[in-house]
Structures are given as C-alpha cells and as structure tokens.
Amino acid sequence: MKESLSQVRRLPLKCLGMLVIFFLGMQSFYSNDLWFLLATGREIIDNGIPYENPFALHDGMRIVVQQWLLASELYVVSDAFGMQGLAVQTSVLGCIFYALLSRGVRLFASEKGWAADALSFSVALAAITIWFTVRPSMVSAIILLVELLVLERYKRGGRSRILAVLPLCSLLHVNIHASFWWLGPVLALLYLASPPRKTVGVFRRYEYRKPLILIAALCMLLTSFANPYGLQGALYLAYSFGPASDMPIIELQPIDLLSQAGVIVVFLAVLGVVLAIRRGRGRVDLQASILFAGTLILAFANRRNGWLFIVAAALFISPLLVSPCADFSRFGKGRKADALARKAYAAMPVAVSAACALCVVTSVVPLFDGEQWEVDDSPSTPVVAIDTLNDRIAPERREDVSIFCSFNDGGYLEWFGYPVFMDPRPELWSSSVTGCEKDYAAEYARYLRGEVSAEEILNEYEFDYLITKDDTAMDAWCQGYDACVVLAEGDEYRLWERL
Image 1 (tube, rainbow, N blue to C red):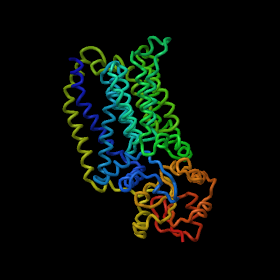
Image 2 (cartoon, rainbow, N blue to C red):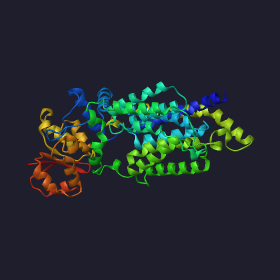
Image 3 (cartoon, rainbow, N blue to C red):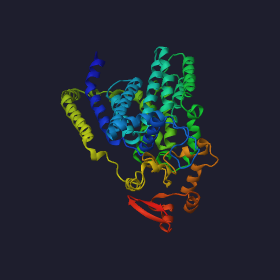
Image 4 (cartoon, helix red, strand yellow):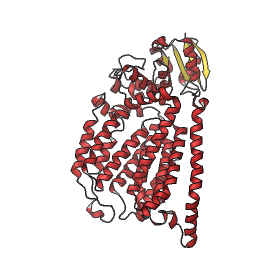
C-alpha cells in the first residue's frame, strides 16, 4: 500500500518529466544528417532499395544503406507533416526512451524512491539535449533498452518465452541502424557471466538458465542477415568504421573532457566509482558493472558513444542510491522534515499543473510558426547556392550536373537532386563498400589532410560548379583561377561556376 501511494505521489512529476523531454526534443531534433536521410528515403519510396549509389558523381558504385527503414519512414513523415512532424516524432521517441530508462533504473534500484526517478530524468535530459536528434541513435537506444529489460526480467525469474523478443529486436535494429545492431547480441552474452566465487558479498546473485540466453543470442546473430544487403548489411560496421574514422567527423573524435558531454561523462564515472566503493557491498550488479566499464571506454574513444555510457551509468548507480537519498521524507530528522515533506506534497499538484501547462504551450505554439521551421543558410545547408543553381538548372537536368562539395553539405545537395562528390557518409565512397578499384573516400581524406592538392582534384574531375567554404584550399585555388567565377556568396561559403 505504501509503495502504491508513493507511486501515485510521483505520477505528477513523471508527467512533468515527460513534457519537459517532449519540449526539449522539439528544440533539439535537427541534425544536418537529416538531408541525406530524407533523400535516401525518397529514393527508396520512389525506386526501391538501391544497390548502386544514386547520389554519387561516379558510376558503378555499390551502396549499403544502413538506415534504409528509418530513412523511408522519415521521408513519409516529412512529406506528410513537414519539419514539424519530424520534431514531434523525435519528441515522442524521447518520451519513450525516458519511460524505458525510468523502468530500467527502478528495476535495478535497491530503494525505489525519488532518487531513482531523479537519476533517470537527469540522464534522459542529458541524452535528449546533447546526443539525440532525428538520427537513428535514439531508436537504437530504445531497442537496446527493450533488450536489456527483457534480459533483466528473465534474470529475475521471468518466463523463458520472453527471450523470443530478442531476435525480433535484432531484426528491427539491423534494418534501422546496421552499425549498432551488434550491441544487442553482445548485451545478451553478458548475461552468461556469473559473479566469481571470491566476490561473495560484493555482487548481487541471481539463479537463471543461461543456455537459453545463448540460444537467444545466436538467433539474434542469425536474424541480422535478414536485411536487403545480407552479409554486407550485417557487417556494415566492419566495412565502414575505418573509412569513416579517417575523416574529421566531429562525433567520431575522442570526447572533449571540458565539453558539456565530457563533464557529464566524467561526473557519472566518478560518482559511480565513489558510490561503489562506499556502498557497493552486496548491491553491485555484475552485468551493470561490465556495461559501466565497457561503455566508459567507448565514450572516451569517440563522443557519439557518450549516450551509451550515461545509460549504463544510470543502471550501475541506481542500486547504490540508498538511505537519505532515497525519498524526500528521509531528508533530515524530526518534525520539521516531516512538515516540509507534507508541504511539498500539498503544493505539488498546483506547481506541476502550472509547469505542465507551460510545457504544453511552449511545445504546441511553435508548430504553427512556419518561419521557425525554415532552413537557415550555412556551409552545411547552402540555401543561397541551391537557390542559384535551381534558377539555372531545370530539375530534369540536375542529375547530369557535376558539383564539388564537402561531406557536410553533400546531403543537402542530394535532397535537391544533385549528384555529389561526397556526403556525410564518407564510408559509402570507400572501395570496401563500393567495390570500385579506386577508393574515393581515401582520396578525399588525403585532400583534407593536404596530401592531395585542390589543383589535382580539379584536373581529375570536370566539375561544372564548386561550393567552397571560406579559407579552404579549394576556395583559395578558385580565387586565383580565372576560369572560375563567383555566382553567389552565402554564409562562409561561395558558389563558383567553372567556365
């Protein structure tokens, strides 16, 4: 009865948390990768799954679209509801992520009080504001949390048939985000481990049949081949990680410890270690501790893995939140603390209702403001350059135009039907994916490092137009070359025509 009453009291705050997550999802949904996802989704809806790259200047390049299912869905939503629809979808997914994370944290927690709710909300808040956008990472997080909850339910005495969900999750994951699906089977294999006998009194112990988990993990591996590209789709990470890491892609760089993401990762890492030392005896979960250590290494390796760590950290820390930090009524001692708790409970409905109303208004009103959803001109979304090109080139002629661009603005050009020299998926230009003798991704990486000059690139490719960022080697070369004339200038970039 006491636990049920406590849950009722926390319900208003959970609703407020959902609305806050929804509001923040509306604000932070945008990612520059959206454009190549929409272009790819349109290609799939109109012409089916592509096996030859329809976006590249070069002919005969094989392609593997690792996010084909999500790209198709994003295009359908965008076509029906515009940017507003994509923002709402991202917010809804953020709320689902928060609900699943909250369930996971409370499942691991020793004392299911306010601290567990605060921890899950804080982690969800960090994830939605720093890591999650319209890209597939949030969907991956949701699928991985479902897999984790299934495994935890089974570990804690659930029926074995619940494990049938795992291969279905793997099947969905490989078609939504082929470079991340493998984390599911790895997660399942962690549950084959048992605490060493010498650690009696340190780790929590559970009795469950491990061979069934091994069978489920093998089924997850087998279902990964059920994608349009078969083995190449299942092994997409192995094909693509090398070429992608060779590029100066921000999200693949080591995490900056002084950045917002770095501070959060370091704080949770230190908090987890300190709590484990002080309160860990008999409370540490073996699987959570392995995830905590493993994902911390991944987070330091590159910043896009930060969300993996903060989720693992929440699960690792939650059993260690005990005693004074478990519930409001336990802060302090005596009548004053009890009176303060009663006042907080009494004021909660009004305060939460007001906050909920504010979140609803600030989330709904922007949906009707058309100007807010317009794309700003930038080097990654060269609106001025595209408008100039569209005025000069009819839609049916665009596929015959050759344009030099960087990988950041390539997706935006693809959305308007122009073949590109490179896009935000440089791994798709690698010979390991394309099957071509020439490695276009490696050539572009050498150009970025200055090992290949702008003149060499221009001598090899007959570009009709060039979009160059200010203060780059290609921009400097065009300024000193009489056969290139400026057609338009945008925000820190220029559009050139090659005569």
